[in-house]
Every structure is written in structure tokens, then in C-alpha cells.
Length: 183
Image (cartoon, rainbow, N blue to C red; front, side, top):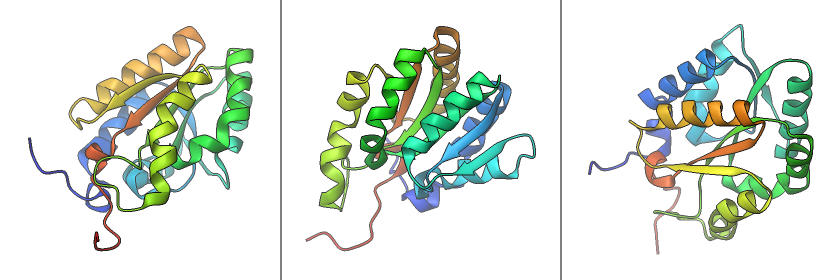
């Protein structure tokens, strides 16, 4: 297995372009996001597309409401966020399940493989369970070669079954951030 690169080296990598192409081909027109280094390349692709509306959020639950409104207006969304923001969405996730609103979420994981920040561990470890408890179908991906296909399948699943689906991008896929020396 090859050594993963740091999040910031990978941010403009080929998986970002591949996932962007999947979103575009899948009819995604709105991409609400909370800025995240692991998603930087994908965010930049979406921002550069004049047919996609990339919307910077101040908090993740705003993205759920925007995506639901977009769906009611006939548009598809894909929300981008970090696992630490999943806790902010819990109450709003009930809207998706109850209203049968489809949504694809791409969630970069923290608090796992190679994490340096102890504050990221609790929510990172809880993220899959929290999403599943709120009725969100989850798919985990650690392989950049498989990621575009996983996103395509998850996009189809979300919009064919009117369900929220989260693709969890493992820290191993992104590479561990290293902002300080490990003690």
C-alpha cells in the first residue's frame, strides 16, 4: 500500500477532479460546504463551474436546510463537511428523514488514523454511529481509485430512494494532518 500524502498535498489531487466530474454528471447544481482543507480541491472545482452554486456555510445545519429547499425547487445538492461538523447537523437531519429529502453528503473524517488533535477524536469516532442513528446511509471510502465510483453509487442511492447518504472519506484517504510534532 502506498504512503498517504498529507491532506494539503492531496487537496488538488486527481480524486477531487474525479468526484467533481461525478457530481456534475449526476446533475448536482448546489454544493453547500463548510471550508475544509481535505476538500479544498473539490471545493475549488465546484466554485470554478458557472453551472454549480458553491455556497460557503457558517455552520453545517444551514446546508441541510439549503439542500432541502433546493430539492423542493427541483435541484440536486451535495453537501461537503468535516466529521467534526456532523454533530451540528443532528436536529436538521430529522428533516431529511421525515420529509424524505434526498441528499448526498461528503464527510472528511478526523479523529482516526494518524490524528494529532485530541479534540477531533470523540466526534470522529462517533460520526458513523450518529449518522446511522439519524437514518443516514453511510459508505466509507479509503481508496482514492474507488472514491469516484463510491460517490456515483451514493448519489444514485440518495436520489433514487429519497434518502440521505453520507460518503465518509477516511483520514487514511486524505492523509493525516500534521500541525504539530506528536509527543
